[in-house]
Length: 594
Image 1 (cartoon, rainbow, N blue to C red):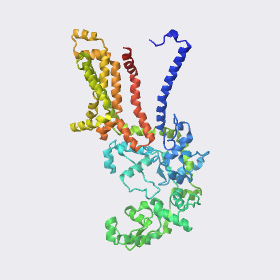
Image 2: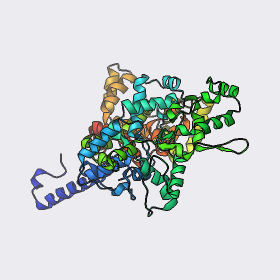
Image 3: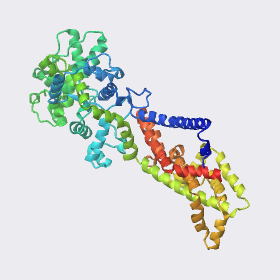
Image 4: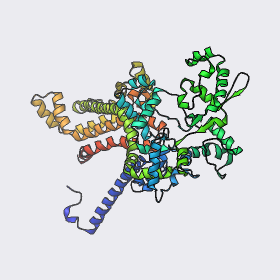
């Protein structure tokens, strides 16, 4: 029966009351829904829009913002890389504007030209120093390895000479293919990475580069400042002394040696270098495993890729090496030449590479795929870490299920004994049980930890379940509810020969579903949100629950991933409430009515 009879609902005061009630409830709903939507939107943010405050993701309808997010990820959140590629001074990703018109013919010609060149790109969507997430290509590489090795991390470690403890420990910090210091030695691991980039990485996730812009960013601008005129990078050493000095520094020490060639005019200096470095031919043959009866039998490799076992020597000859008498041996600067796709394009067309136009065209072609990526990339990262590669979900499901089961066994049995048999000290026992709530969990955690350690139960589910198996307030609440049940039912059942367990199950449990639902929900929430205690007694990663995983994620990943983790973590409690809301409301209302 409603609180307001139907006959009085047409009065204007009652209608105002109804309107006020509905307005209050709507406002209360918004205070719950809006924060959740903000959190959901936060799960899509990267460095460009991480400081925004919008209920819904703006890039879903703002292509300019989506373009900024794409370019930011394509150049690995590095303004320096963008400046070098586009040839611009201001490379703030948050203020980039799309080109009003794109020369599709020229952009397509550049794409075809670059496709025929070696080493013409570097992997974008990989490093995330600002947003602190897993780049798309890092996630793709991990999936690639799982497919190649049937999800067995031990097989990956054996084949690629790595030592990852698990899939969540896999990290990729690829070298900068433009820079010498960013280079890593050849290994099965990096060979697998290159195979992934060539066969599985999407085309729109690979960024082109311009060695001329790289020369300006790394050498010319630090020496001259951004306001100085910028010379074109040439294949050979220029005549101007200042530019020649900068060019020589760039070629010898900065740029990756794969872009450098050493001409045959350096053969004499090469042989003198080897003779000084190895002293004699027997030592040379023993170290390099090359057959040579004379230094003239060791030709100078023209390119770094062709140097083979002499690669270290080739690099030392390029950069310069001092012998024991402090004599400098190095390739003459006039024997050095640069070879790269952008230099070839400049010689062929007489124009700068249209990298900006090509990036804009790629965005136009793959806009839907890029938008979908940014919508789900952080959620996908969390799903892979917590669900696919970690045991957080399985541990949490088992822990919560057992916590609810034990709460529905231990607490009702204790409350049934106090209500059914009414011992003389029942109220003293209830008072004792309620007094256990006077001590905050922070006080009891240390003695409980010491006890569990002495029992050898750390890093087990028993350590999680035993301390919370009985709850004083739940027993108190259940006893009050059981006391309200008609005593005649038990007397009739006893006359019919029913035992206590049958009466407990058939009568008490049957009539107590609402309050038991409240107890079960409370046990679920306590278990699901258990963080500090779970972290304290289960420090082994294989025993971490979702709440512990959330804390660990916060130490490594940025706000976007954390918002995605919070969204996924909020879904189970929301689902449980939606499925059990009728029982929960009955558990709240029925005791009040009685």
